[in-house]
Image (tube, rainbow, N blue to C red):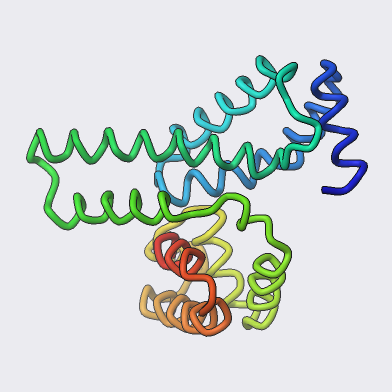
Length: 198
């Protein structure tokens, strides 16, 4: 971890609100997008991330300055999101008013989230591959992927916004997924995450 990052964790440990605000501004959106990609519920995802940062501040004095704080935050978000999905899965099975396909999807999201390594999420190699792959897409394809990945829109909603057919959106997403599969072939969890999100 870089020295400046360690210093910020140290400052946070000593109740520096500026250090806390730095981490909040730098990682809130990323944590939210990660949680929402599995939960598909922006309200719940937002609450989980807010709770995570509140817990960080409340327990700041226990922080280890050597801690990889982004990975620690993501691990906390992951565990909270996983607990929520597990509760949803149990509820769906008990009430028996959710189709089998929806239940299987919840179980798949749970399995994929359990396999996710938060520390690896911040690995520069993975970030570089994802960025490079995004940049290799055509402007329209990149826009479609961004709307699906970062805004959580459905194919129908994206098609409506862009004034094109749903078939066109499916084409762009299929094209992007093929590239991500090829470029991230050594990172199974990330392929599953992208498949799950798109």
